Amino acid sequence: MLGTNTLPFGAAGDVGSPKAAPMPAAHDLAEDGPSAVTYRAFLSYSHLDDTAARRLHRRLESYRLPRRLAAGRPGGSRALGPIFRDLEDLPAATDLSDAVKRALARSAAMIVLCSPAARASHWVAREIALFRTLYPDRPILAAIVSGTPAEAFPEALTGLVEPLAADLRPEGDGRRLGLLKIVAGLAQVPLDALVQRDAQRRVRRVTAITLAALAMMLAMAVMTIAAITARNDAVRQKAAAEGLVEFMLTDLRPQLRQVGRLDVMTSVNERAMRYYAAQGGLDALDDAGLERRARILHAMGEDDQNRDRFPQALAKFREAYRVTAEQLRRLPGDPDRLFTHAQSAYWVGYSAYLAHDWPVAARHWQEYRDLAARLVAIDGRNPKWLHEQGYAEGNLCTLDLAQPARRTAALDHCVAALDATARAARLEPATTKAAEDLANRHAWIADAWFARGDTVRGFAERRRQLALLAPFAAREADNMELQDQWMRALMSLSEDLRDHGRTAEARPYHTRARALAAQLLSRDPDNERWRGWSRRIDAFDVK
Image (cartoon, rainbow, N blue to C red; front, top):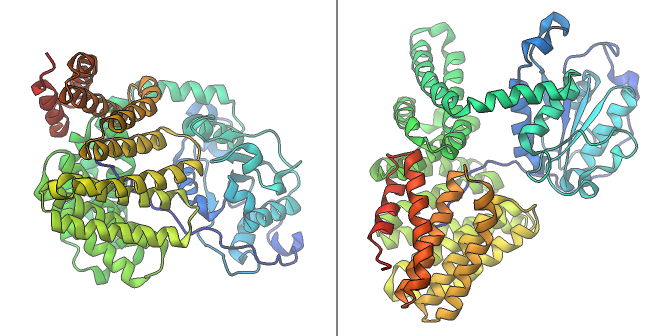
């Protein structure tokens, strides 16, 4: 029931709104005339939404239209791109950069990523105003990533655009349909045709993912050999190989995890580790290379740990810790680098926790808690940082409960973890992940109350855990991570009931937990973690 960290990499947000500079005239920007279109669209967003912007940009640039729908386009092109995404953060500037102005002047359309942060962003407002000044007749597509429409729409859009093109929130169109709506708007093709094609692809998804992973393993090997043997193309081939490794170990992993096939990644991880071991010291890597290496090492270590390959996992986490420490040394106050180093501290501590090395676990988890506190001090209303604080306090709660001499001291950390997680939940939309995190916090508070001998409060917290998870578990039967947590919640309640002499009440929860464990193992028979839970449930006597 230990809180599992997520490892997204965000960007620094908009800081303040300096006084606006005068709007340049349209003829100052459209240097090559209105017909000089370089970009299919300009993506406008707050840098607090950088993760969502990067994801949407990548998916739009990689999207390919069906051949039938692309037939009427110039040259029959199936690509949507290029899409311009500004990589700069402008907290201290007084006006948009020249590069942004030129990109706006050479874009055929604009996509506005709408959120409370975007509504408050001075720069998003100026980009919208400048694009509309330049091209009153060119389309602006709006897409919500967080908040309600009233909270998310920048005021600069009022009266300028058609009804909302896409709602990327889980409770709206979702990422899949939302993307298709944006594609249909950019390519001027029927949405129904795109949806039908997407549905056909989903039918073949599980098989295709597995085959693609195996094919990419071969491609990675070929590209790595090419990078070594082709000296003239060494730099290009190296970048391509690393990009492919990163895709497989980050973007592909969540899909394989949801369908219960992380076993496919074992040989990919081993090849990638050998590749990076041959790359030499950290001094030769630029900041982007360090960030990519840390992200991949975290992913590989987590995969090894999920398959009970603990020495291999620890080696990767220690190397990741060394990499992220170097990142933080180069830019000590940067929130993203504080975050990534916090992840390394967590994983090294977790490896020590699994080995019952309490002093090492405490040292790294206290470091993790301190790094999370620094993030919250930078921005106390950032849900991502509050979640980190909740995870960090939850880990210290877990560590206290694991040591008999400290069990009664665990409650303070457990309650602090719930408080931080609840504050984060109030600042973001309700999602499955938010419910899982809150449920996990209540589970550990239940253990802390039981450790103090307060069974009434212990059972109350355990039932709050189940109440939070139940609706999501019923709706998302194919989400294996969620079903894993639901199974463990049922198992824990059945064990607590039996241990307190309430065997008849324990029996139905035990039966449901056993059925779920069997279902999980049927998806991935080699998953040692699920096999261990199954053995524990089978050995539990509720007769």
